[in-house]
Image 1 (cartoon, one colour):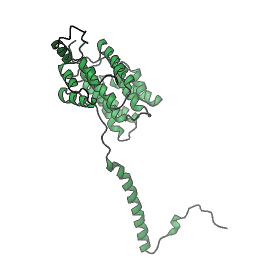
Image 2 (image 1 turned 120 degrees about the vertical axis):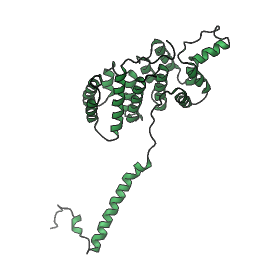
Image 3 (image 1 turned 180 degrees about the vertical axis):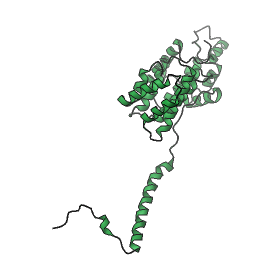
Image 4 (image 1 turned 60 degrees about the horizontal axis):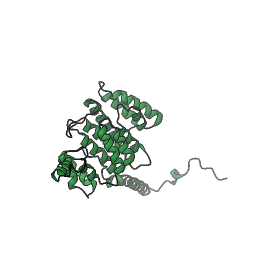
Length: 288
């Protein structure tokens, strides 16, 4: 297979369009404190009936009512949701982790959007999924294992992902891409090293290899940023910085209520005194 060959996704493009809408709406309406059951019922009416998304929503709604989570239902729909999607959702629903559920839903929405695009590649999908693990501090061991079972990757890619699983933390991420790139093979042939040792199977193109080589001994986030700029790979959604005004609003509301109460007392005193009887308990027992 050519390195630049488009991504072969297991589902039709319209399915990923509806998945994108599904995850995006869930993330948006979470901020409005709408119950998930109501959101699922509303989204079910919005998605196309010609896709499998309505049936998936019905199943997820039933699982949500019985178990209270999405990940369990998504795992049972392994023909529709990938192992990586299930892993991201399970990590987002894990109360012991600091992975925001809204960010997890946006991660899945952007991944589905990329899968449905005409320019999607295995290289771009891998970089996006690995960046998701890196930026959100998810487990590399379970995450890469889930990625290796993604049907969009062939046997060569799956085997390499398990190799990355063993080497992550020991070998730089830039080196992992560089050694498996066309750029490395060209350099090896130029330096006449191709005949002395077996060149690894090429998984990345010239541009990915050149960018990885230029970002060796640097932070992996700089490599992700360079791949976004030069190859238009999708960027992982990140939490927005907290707005200090949102924290001040409840405090200001309480202060305003206190000031209003004080003003009412001052007005009553000016009209002839404060009626203290309204502060008495209604059922206070009488003294003998």
